[in-house]
Image (cartoon, rainbow, N blue to C red; front, side, top):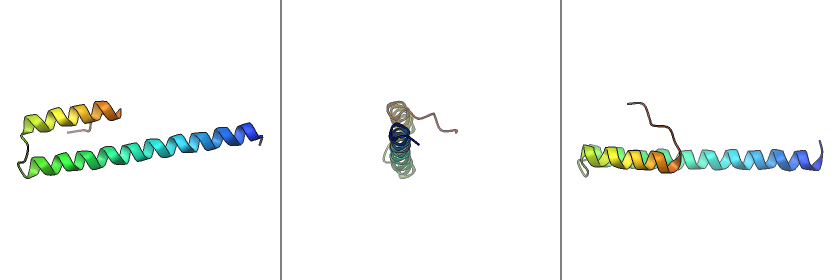
Length: 65
């Protein structure tokens, strides 16, 4: 394996780690929204808008309902 191949592999691993951390953050933020809705701290309309905005901003796919 050449040095360039090793750097490419490390870079791919770093990118995968970043994607995983970003997804974990998305899930935590969604869970917080879920809690707010459950506790009636926000309305369903606010939840839907916030989840849509979060999903779009984080580059995630819309969770199945």
